[in-house]
Image (tube, rainbow, N blue to C red; front, side):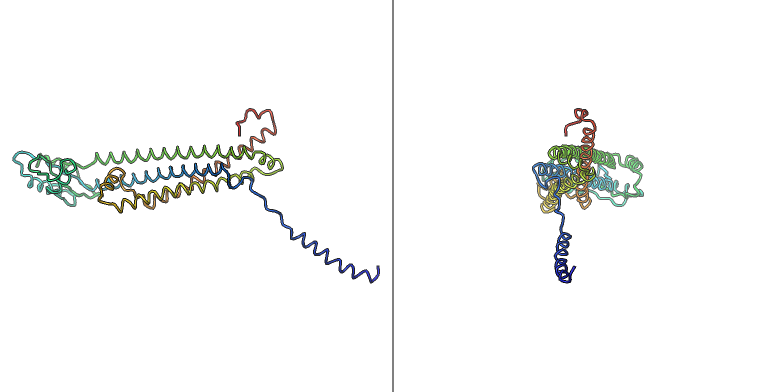
Length: 341
């Protein structure tokens, strides 16, 4: 080799180095998702999940609202007892009311007593007997309201016996019947709400199963090719799981947000329209529309539970479908016994 060849080799080396550097800088083209990010089936499933989430959150909020209202009624009733005095011939009603109050306040566990005057009694009977009611013309019983200590209630039987001996026209009502009815109503409402939630979640899971099988049916050849070339089941399941997680999060977020907005709007309307006939009727029928922070946290938790159930259902469905593919591949004669995908 002569000296004249050295410059040619030196000039050729930079070209080879440049080619090697370009090959090193080559990047692998990113792979596309197995399932398309948006299609008709995915949009329909998102709408169904949104409706299911709305119904679930609506039921949860209604149950929380009824429980809070029943608890408020129960607490208010348990703080008071009522002494009812029936009118009788020759009975001084004012003196009888004061005597019943004083007798009740002699027991340990009573705090204060309030006699309902004629005006308060007339307002209490106004929805049934009309305005400008004259109590002297009607044999209307009168009431004494006694406030009691909830932590240390008095002996109701002893109060009842003393009133019967000293004032036969007096009847003690400790509201136990109403409290028992409210507790029973609250429990029944909770059980009904729980049953509705279970039905909603069951319908949602079945919907996700059918949607996942439909997506697998349309992309079964892709799953079979991936599985045939060595893709692990967890990889394929992860792709489907990620796809349905996005759909379920969008749908559950929309449904939960609509339910939360509905309760917030109803609560705002009720707070701004107090002392109106519409608000009073709504309050009498449904109680307060305020569900509190615990109710909104429950709505958020319901959204997460729906997304989690949807994701896990999709994963289990994909894993089962891949197992069916393995069974058919090992024994094609058993394909008739498998459910259609």
